[in-house]
Length: 195
Image 1 (tube, helix red, strand yellow):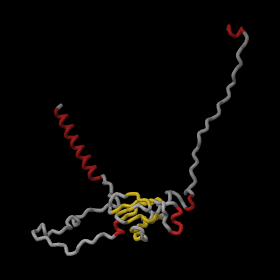
Image 2 (image 1 turned 90 degrees about the vertical axis):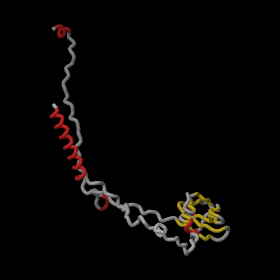
Image 3 (image 1 turned 45 degrees about the vertical axis):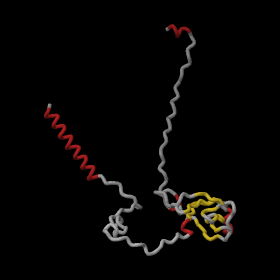
Image 4 (image 1 turned 135 degrees about the horizontal axis):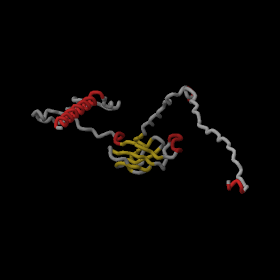
């Protein structure tokens, strides 16, 4: 009995090992998506290593310039009536969704202050204009162009949208008519019942 049990355990281990290595060697992993970017070793160290190696820090020679006013704002969405696009003139009853300095976007109505003395001046179908105070618009923000629609054709179709071959006729089951059986009329004579 001990020999059978040990033989079973040994063959179970051999089978488990064969299955493990078979799956490891024969099954291919799912490929990485086309937009995936491999991380390289060169991207790891990009900073200044002089302080790490013992050198005295060097003062920066150029002062950091303030970001350009147009780059501080990002237009994410617009709510404007359709008549705003005629002639390109802005309307006074629109709302624009704008992110200021990379913060969470907020909805600003026309005439609302954005940042400091900057005011949302006008809104059209694809643009929003920002001005300082009551002056002329100084910054014009534009929505990015819409993504083109996905186009293609269905598999198995030819030009004109007609199928490659007519669909096969599927026979339908039609039950056969029931045969008519002759039904004898019931006997009415009493002698037939006593027989």
